[in-house]
Image 1 (cartoon, rainbow, N blue to C red):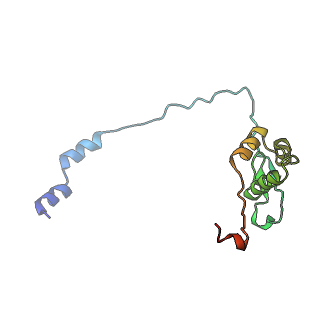
Image 2: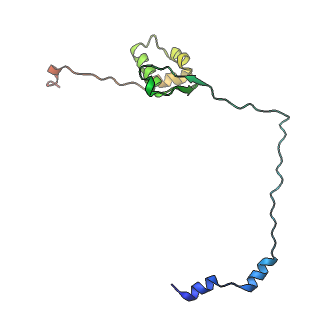
Length: 128
């Protein structure tokens, strides 16, 4: 809003310009030293994948997952199988079937419990 301040901002200072022209700066990065690995080449870790166990909800599920992981549909299926038949679907069998660690399966079975829908008969609704 002040024209005299604006004029000072855009004014060239010839003395300063001549001093700046005399300044020369050279910048270099230090040379990069590569550590000699002795000719070793570390192999790339390829992530192993497995096909999912497609059930009735297979159209909604992913087709491949990494080993050591399960899809949502597989998780719900194995939790339900364990709930219905715990003597058949043990943690060890689930671990082998889905390529998981037994400790992880035990944690999954302990902390994730599928809910059950209970429908009350019509005559007992009034009593509730």
